[in-house]
Length: 86
Image (cartoon, rainbow, N blue to C red; front, side, top):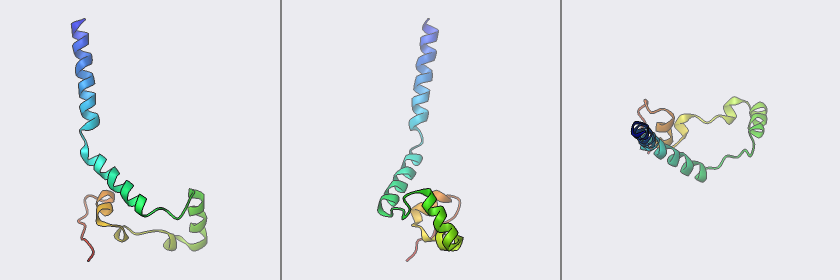
């Protein structure tokens, strides 16, 4: 019985460590939430976006990565060196 209790305790502790071990992920979510709260989407529904995409064309609707703030660029493409705009 004590082996089972030890196994369960270790399993629970390891699971807890794995859930809270990636602080970088939480920071990315926080940065994205702040960005989206300051810059809300002009589309209420995805269908509105698709309709606008059909009417105006892909170039008029799409936003390039370079137009986004550096912290968002890093989240979208961490391998790329981000240079801040002046």
